[in-house]
Length: 151
Image 1 (cartoon, rainbow, N blue to C red):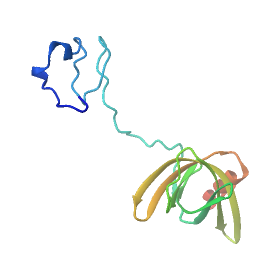
Image 2: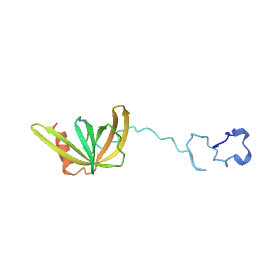
Image 3: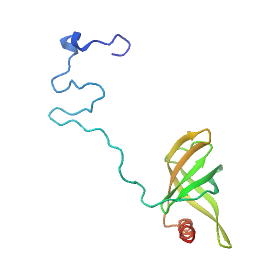
Image 4: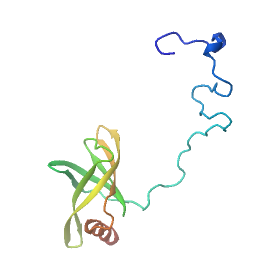
């Protein structure tokens, strides 16, 4: 009970008891009367990413209007990437990612729209930011895939 002494279940009055089938102990999965208990969630056993990631450590910039955030890439795949940032970035926010890719004698600056899907604190170094390519069929995404195929 909030704000008072918790009642011992054995000393609870008849008005404090739940109807049969509703006296589920705290911390156990709830179920509707007549329905089996809901099993606890299981950790994923398979990789949820739609494409394999490759390490890629480059400086980059996220922009949103007049806001610019320096970041670094950690790894990259055909549908998304992981970034490192000194500050958190809100999941669900949309940004433009700009980075310079060099392969062979060629350097190309790429700008791709991304959607942040997670922001995890990693310690004093900052945050890991998971981002999906918002336009996986766009020109910037095509350049990223060409870079990954060539390297």
